[in-house]
Image 1 (cartoon, rainbow, N blue to C red):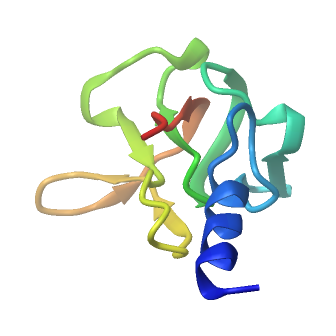
Image 2: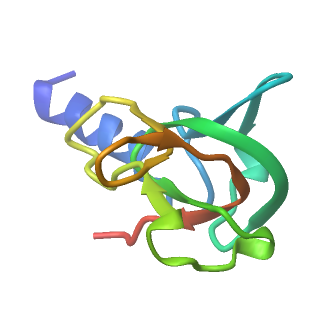
Length: 121
């Protein structure tokens, strides 16, 4: 096996044609522990209500999420924050705690999260 073959295999694993790769996960760090969303539950366009969390981790590069202050994934300016990246060249997890405020920062909790599938290149 040459080096080019291995690189191609890694790219195929990280960029599935449909759905999530094994490495793709959204983790909601809530008051009652972590809730992992992955596998067949990780679908672009899905809205998850009643999240009640301010900290999130997105693993992988095929999905990202938007944390919303409002239920039903309602957009609300700076209280709709994107977490994650679509850069498959980076293996870094995206970890984010929701904060707002101008002079004094305060943590806020999302009521819902929206799963977004990254565009295929």
